[in-house]
Image (cartoon, protein in one colour):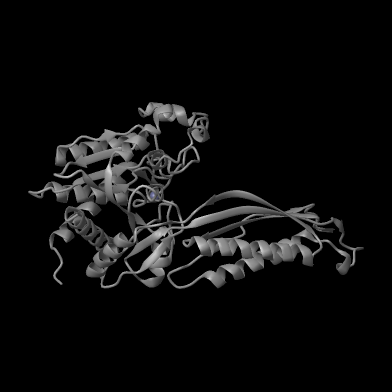
Length: 423
Ligand SMILES: [Zn+2]
């Protein structure tokens, strides 16, 4: 099938915009577009000027500080294309802005068409990274209605500035942020499209430029406390010990086995014991107390539930085997957010037309798109991530892969516009 020759020109334009933005907002250590700060404001001014000059459109700032650009159509049925212009300190040149600037190109392409049967909306989410105050997905969770304002009101940055003050400085009243949810619910959204760099090594390991994202992982995050008896390491015979660390170690190995057991091609899961604290932490003492964390992630809710159940059984057995007590404490959980099956199929078509193959993968990190899943059909595509690196200046997608990714994503937008127009 001959591909549309305008896709290549469009991809080139997005890459030129990305380079222009990197030039404008990076220093020797990487991108510095931290939300609500001076370079972030400069980024937004640059973007608004571009939108005005090229599309003769204005930016609408919603109550949570998200930027919207709308091309109205004959019908109010709308397609949303999204990204985020904020970055972590010393960030990469693609994280977030790849989405916003490819969305801008989708608007350019649509603006040039004589007929506009449906409405097209760009949304540039505010403070996706949470790099300054520690809470990520701020703008999208306000629009999605899941944000608890009291959780963020008094968060402080390193200078002691509160989140509320930083928001006010950018024209956002923290007490009105959830009005953004009312605004979102007024949109007759038929599809949500977001392109992002993978930030992991999966596409690279498959040698594929781009892939279709199946959804964002659900997470079960807990701490366990094993309590035995601290004792002298020289005088206490091994069979008489109540070693809390050995129980935790036995548990950690079981958690790895559970993860491997549920990992299938295309349905990967991950499990991590990232924190281990031992007391009394003396070279000559049997550990009396050991705290260990567990973080399990999967795309399928039943799989995630089974993984947790088996981890609980393994912990109970480890406690019994080592004659120690066990307590569980929940830290945080979120359910899996699977993307829309029809949009997944459409994205597979687009990716296959451009690259000949359409790998599918889950997203380990959360994204703004996860906040939209309860409200509308959502799809994401990922771009190849060199060495899986992100949130650092080394973050990269080789230009030939970036070009193919962009062409496939822009083609997906074309297909989606045609589908929504056809009803
Ligand atoms: Zn991002």
